[in-house]
Every structure is written in structure tokens, then in C-alpha cells.
Length: 274
Image 1 (spheres, rainbow, N blue to C red):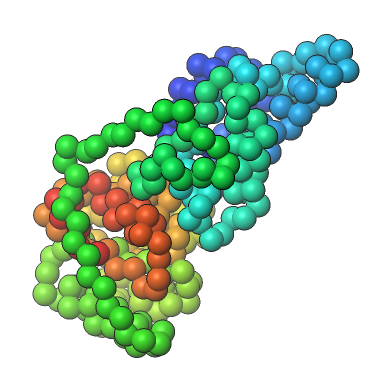
Image 2: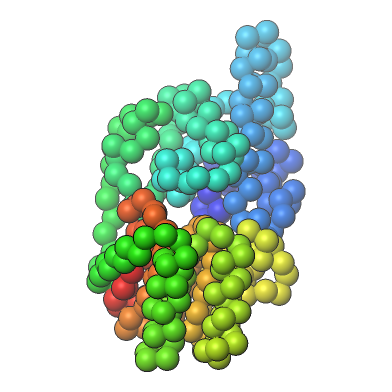
């Protein structure tokens, strides 16, 4: 909760660093740590409410008045779309349902859902739509190959064709660690390119390309052609290579909004073929 908005904490929380300096306590290679941050806020709100009800003295090191807080929730679509980190999502949902109307402001940010989303949790008072002037052209192709083995084989044929016949950048998403590793190994052994493997573990391993991607807003693939990954590839990865065409290959069924998120990883591509 909100990795990008670094000035927000200083502006609204002042110098109460003992409570609010979450970054000091969090693993820098776990780039979200949503659960830790959400539960610490909930604890501080509950302590404030308890002190208010019992006439106790306010302690600004352990308590926060929700009405003094502007809370920004980035990538808020994950509450509806993510099929993992259920505990973290539950904690953020509690922030919205229990304290949402009490905040000074509650701001949700997403590139792939509209203001009707999350209506079961909160009704948004206002919507600001931001459109990129340099948004890439998106082209979608769907391959229905029946069972999983045929789907994997079809994906490998597409990847091999793109590597051998084009110079385009390629992102591959599948929620299976073994299969993703198999794709990377095959491409290295038979096609001469290995690329990076992005998953929950590799983003926490120091000096890996995955960790660099997860912690940098200016990552470029450079000479690398291929990135494979699980859902960790969709969150917070910002690839800055200026290319004419990039390919996004998603193996398996995915919500359309989730596909849009994946296609947005190549920030400066003129055209995305998914």
C-alpha cells in the first residue's frame, strides 16, 4: 500500500517514523508486503478507537485517527482478480469496509478496472480517468488447443517461432513454477536465449534479474529477448525498452483485466501482440 507514493507517508504522517516507517522492517525484495502494512494500520486504528471509547490519552506512536489519514491503494484490482495472497487481500478489504468512510480520503488506483468495481466494498464518490497519449496498439490472438499438454506445446511453438524469426521482446506468463522453468531451459538449450525467470522466490534473491526488475522502475531488458514468469511478473514490473513490437504470451485462462495488466509491463512498446 502504496510503494510508489513515497511522499504520501511524509505528507500525512509527519515524523512519526517509529510507527510508519514500514520499509525499515520489511524485506526489500518482497516488494508489496501488503499484509504487514495493512495490519499495522488496522492495529493503530483499533488502538485509537479503544482509547477514544475509554477516555484514554492519545499516543501518537501507537495510535492513528482514521479521519486524519489519506489512504492510497495501488493496484486495487487485485482485490477482485488475484487468486493468491488471500490473507493480504482480506486485510486490505477490512481497511476498506471497516474504515473506508472514516478516512480523510480513500484513493484507489488501477489501470484495468472502472469505478463500478469493488461496489460490494465501497461506493466511489468520484472517478478520474487518465489516458496515455502514447498507449500502445493492442492485438489479441487466442489459441484453443484443448488439454493442457497441447496448450503448452502450442505455446512453445509460438515462442520458438518468435525467437528465431523476429527480434521482438517476449513475455511469457504461466502460473506453474515447473513449467516456467521448463520453458526457460528449453529456450536456453535449443534456441540460445534464457532470459529471466520472475517468480515470488527469484524476486527476493539478491543480484538476480528478477530482483532488479521488482525493485527498479527503469528496468530494461537490453540484449535479452525473453522473460518468463508467474503472477509475480504482473505486479510492479516496469520494462522500459523502446521497441516497435513486443509479444505477451499467457498460457491458460485469465480475466481480461488481468491480461491488460500483463500487457502493460512493456511501458514503451509501440505495439503489443498478446
